[in-house]
Length: 108
Image (tube, rainbow, N blue to C red; front, side, top):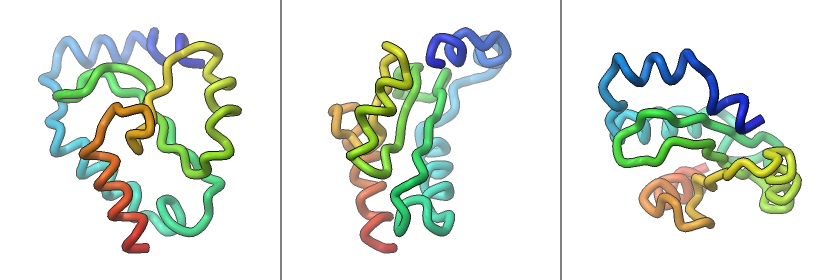
């Protein structure tokens, strides 16, 4: 799945013709997504997989918001060797976003 997503020509084409998405806009999008009922609070059955290609200050790749830590290993197996970066920062990828997500979860 990762290799298919990363080879998407439309994403590469858009990235060449557009400036990077500001990091603040990306964080605002994730905040909005996490305010959806049940996504960041309550049920732990919904996981979010994002393909980032041109976001300011973030490496292109697949980013995963793991809702239930017990599902992390099966999700990594699903990726078939593609690197999945955990948005919650368990892999040390994005501490600022990890704090934001933890705060949103605490609010719920």
